[in-house]
Image (cartoon, rainbow, N blue to C red; front, side):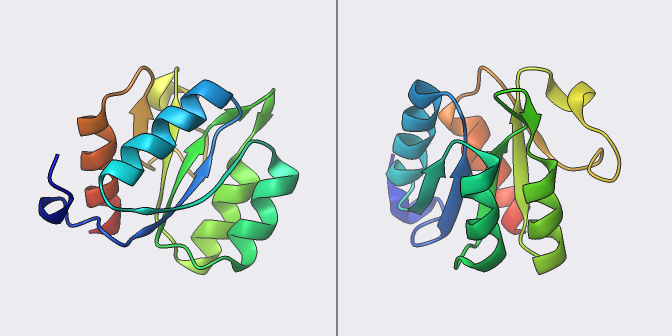
Length: 123
């Protein structure tokens, strides 16, 4: 993939994913787009400080982090005006208000679905 054509080169992407292999895959995919990875982190206590203060353009959030929902991180990002996309094996069915209209990448995902979601989120 030619990173110059994605429009994502240089964008800072926070990755919050608790499964190490999935996290590594997402990190490789967004890296191939020329993005700068923030994190990745696997737990809420690691993600909250980054969501509060890190220089982030967009975030990819696993909806379920070891039994805890990532919605507190989503709340922080929404308050800061930072776009984000949920990743979930349940698709949009797992979303609850106020984030039930947010974009979701359904697992298993493809590089193309991540690329499309990031581009759409960044508008």
